[in-house]
Length: 142
Image (tube, rainbow, N blue to C red; front, top):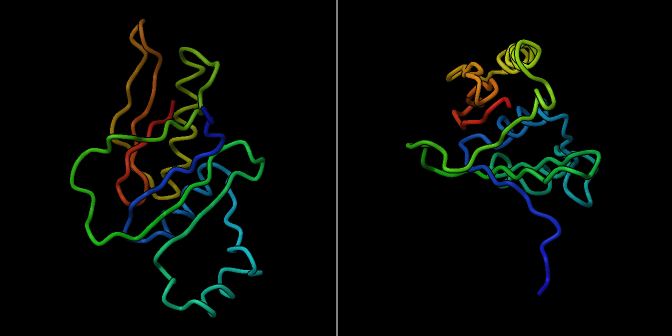
């Protein structure tokens, strides 16, 4: 049986480029122009109906999955069933972890994210911060 080697994460959204550029900043991803084009503007000049319909970005190291953003007519109405965990506190515990998460929370808030809930370590689970991106998609700083 063949195994899947790669996958992409797809976001339904109202403004694919806005949401995509937000996630580029969060993750350090890049948004190269579609194949055969030197820039997104060149692509849109040849495909004007595509503007605002989709956007994609990739991990420049090639390790993380491709992120794809597609325009949909309906807004988000319920909680995400799948979300990204942005691993900003990996290997850290206690106050050191919370400080790292809080610093990343401030950076992402400046990019347009909002905080939903700060969960403080309780002796069993370490701290994490639930947030939303620029269109309300939930994610966690973990």
